[in-house]
Amino acid sequence: MALKDEIREQNKKWKDMTPEQKKKYFLTYYKWHVVVLCIILFFVAILIRDLVRGSRETLLYVMVLNNSEQYMYQGLMDEFAEYAGIDTGQYNLIWDTGNVFKEDQFDYTSIAAIQKFGSYSEDGLLEAIILPESDVAYFEKEEYFIVDLRDFLNEDVYEAVKDRLYTYHCASSGEDLSIGFYLKPEDKAYEIGLFDETDRPVMIPLSNSSHMEYLYLFMSFLYEI
Image (cartoon, rainbow, N blue to C red; front, side):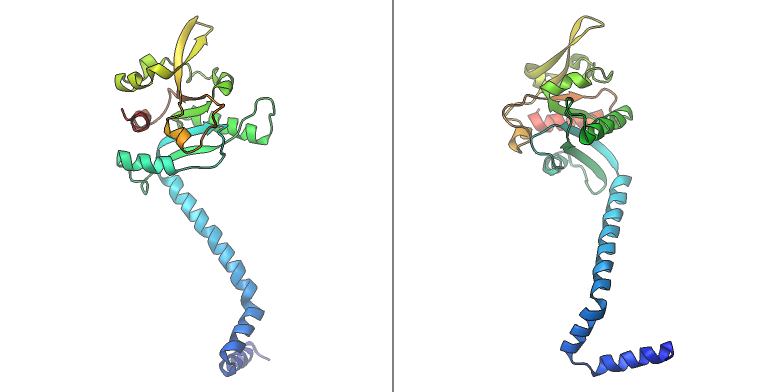
């Protein structure tokens, strides 16, 4: 039978079917085609979304390491965007909590976290990193960590954090430098369950950040400066 004759025959059968028969016929012959098409469309939509997001400029990227809940929580950045009047349809604000690093268990997740930190920080894409005090020593060798906050932060921001400074002893100069500051239980990071009560998390600004002015603004938002 020629293809056009077969199509004509199928159309005739379809017209003669009751609604229930049409439903059964469709599910029998086309169900999996529709399922596969829906899956393809879903992944295409995800790809387009990621491409659009990737094309936006990122104004603030804060990397969180070894927090108590390893998930990408964006609620805090949504609040900050409203506070700062930033259009998140045009710019990215990233609060990246999905990073795990265990120095004594150097597995795939630890390697991935270190590689991400190394790549982003070298390119000036990170404004700050937050991590437990016990993990800071591993990163202190990075030159963009060893910056005294007294010289690095503006006066208002420094005054807000001076009672919670994290001090680092620089062996080469013999100086004690304030390179970061502790987060406290009343801070928003604890309010969202970011760290448990046994941790002493430290926030460390990176000196080679591309958008340090937005980190200042973020700190003003956190501490109501």
